[in-house]
Length: 281
Ligand code: AMP
View 1 (cartoon, rainbow, N blue to C red):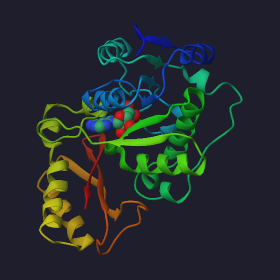
View 2 (cartoon, rainbow, N blue to C red; view 1 turned 180 degrees about the vertical axis):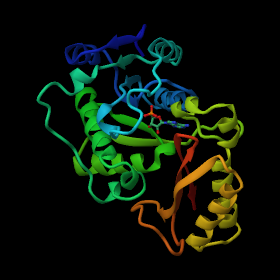
View 3 (tube, rainbow, N blue to C red; view 1 turned 30 degrees about the vertical axis):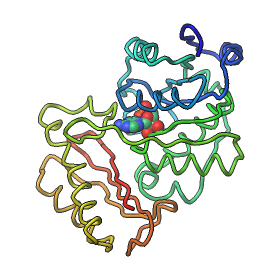
View 4 (spheres, rainbow, N blue to C red; view 1 turned 90 degrees about the horizontal axis):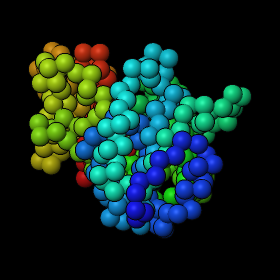
């Protein structure tokens, strides 16, 4: 751990500052507007690594044309304060121009794993994610990179990319941190008004009800999807976009659950799109 937190905005500074970081180096990529979920990733990195590098970059290429790139919440000063308190060594905060200079034309794509779920609802999203994370890996060369189970498909896609491109690092997936009422912490929760915020925990209640069925012996995937739908039907402010019960590793939809599975959903609460998931088995 270095004595005070360094903050860098361009590649030369990053490469210089990196030389002062002890190994193993843990990387925690974020889009900022940090909450306790992000901090839990940093704490795990702090425990397992001798230095911790956090990136803050709202990556324009992973947002669709009708998504919330320009309105995505930002709070640099508050973020830096939290990172300093969390004992972070280096913060990498590039501008979009540093990451994607004029004439930029190189992309990283993972094939099958990006097709269902978030990939089918958000065309181009994962191409943006894998490209920016590959660039972060190349520039920071971490020994371990930390991601949240909250974005389960993202974690699976990045594990695949890391394997396929032979990055010499470990992907660590950390549990989803939740508010006391069960709502998964997310920077986007700030979009919810008071009524929507009250309604939103139904997402985790629905997933938990289905998980309870699974634990009681239900192995029919459609039965679990229907359970989630039935619970959500009781909350008129929530509109389900998809509910999936898929193989944990391949993300292929299941009929019967015979191995570890991922029960995941996306739903609109008002105009805010939220995702959540639980692991079965
Ligand atoms: P984001 O800033 O939303 O791109 O998230 C940065 C990282 O934090 C990603 O790896 C997310 O999966 C992770 N993350 C976001 N929310 C949570 C949460 N509630 N619990 C654990 N990790 C999270």
